[in-house]
Length: 217
Length: 392
Image (cartoon, rainbow over all chains, first blue to last red; front, side):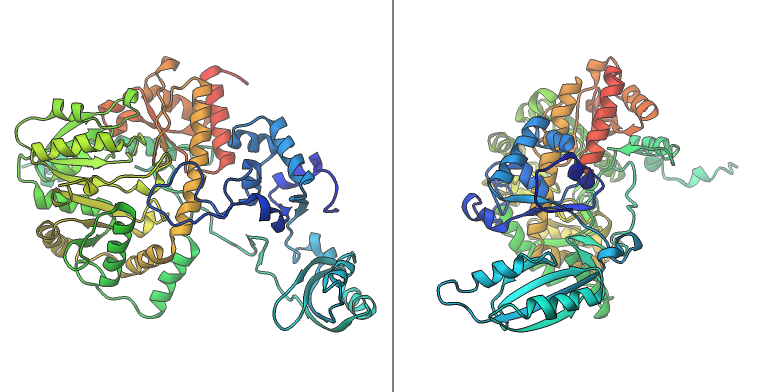
């Protein structure tokens, strides 16, 4: 499934199964989000003002909390109509804050094994006069194999997350595509062996089923 | 000669009424295996934040398995002093004005045993937490219930307090925000109550376990009002704000001679609170505030959701200013609270607790705990709607 495109019913259905997480552009907060201090007296001056990104679009807030709700449920929780929720989502997309939905899968499971090989690659590049790292980063990021791409501080320049159907395919991408991009000085590829937590979801267990009493004082 | 084992049960214990909660618990337990949504719980749905659990595991790994000081670990008492000063604006000395207890329940019991003579009158607002009146009865005190009303959002008023007062009243128990009503007092109301306590020379036992879960403005502790710290035992704990109910860890703060009296009882009965729970509590106070804020925000939205839905359904429900309980009026349905709760459970498989489990002033109301996921709350509200309005 593409991360682009309009929010449609199909994606919401996926979300209802509790397997998808919204992709939200962190840079989108730079203008709209006011970072508040969370430490205050036991009470707080009204509303949800103690939040990190406050005041915030209530729909966005629910998405960020990773709450698996349908649009109808979001509408109830946020105290709006479903149409209003849809409008909020559309606006967030227009503002390029909310980029789309992706399922969060446990790739060790058989059904998800088609995309089972993942790697992180540290890339060193020579920055260009005029363009800095941006041109490289944007070029590398366009490859389908690249899931995420970040400019980093420290010992290397770009960190990219790559996904492929087999080790060979990922290796071929590194040797034939990535390392041959002009300006790339070196790559260091680390294949992921096992996942313990994915996008906030604990794999293999997590919390035990609740033993909370049904009725308690 | 009688062979009934009950002949050995002390008279005042035999006379204690069985908790209404217990009856309802048994009713719900019978429905095991059915798709029951319970709004009858009295604790957070969140598991204790991992960093707190991890600190307890680490403490065990380091061999922290011994008794602590009767008053509790000094490091924890220092952290409590800092926390209470910062959040409640009252200063207590860690050395002799703070005692760590096995939950607020133990602290309340210690206070009753330490301060209540046989026959002393203890006032408490009602509806209230189920153990208040029994705690008084267990020390042979006399409970004096002060009603709170839906029209006041279940805030305790000084007028009601004065009306209920009789000579011989010595202690006032407060629970603000209140379980089961979510009611609390404005600063002005609290000041009037404080003035009344000073006038009548009442000792205040202030259980503020839900204070962090205040949604409509800052919580004010009665202990922070002028002339009150010296006549108040401030009771608090970790169960609600830090989602640590099962750890059983709380504390009491107050004037040194009073804490010393409570400590006397504590040392002969409990000795000390579990060291593992104390270590976890220390971690909670040191690094747990962000988790508290996150959870409070969830409760806040859930409160807004259930209060809106209850009112839409036709159950008159004030907006609880604190805690995670809504206390709607079910009389518009033409049913008593007991009929409503039993009918709702049997017909729609939603458990709420009849208000009379929290005293006679809970008549006509039920307690619905909103410490449950949005999905469950929405489903429960839909079911209640079907129950009340017959919609399919």
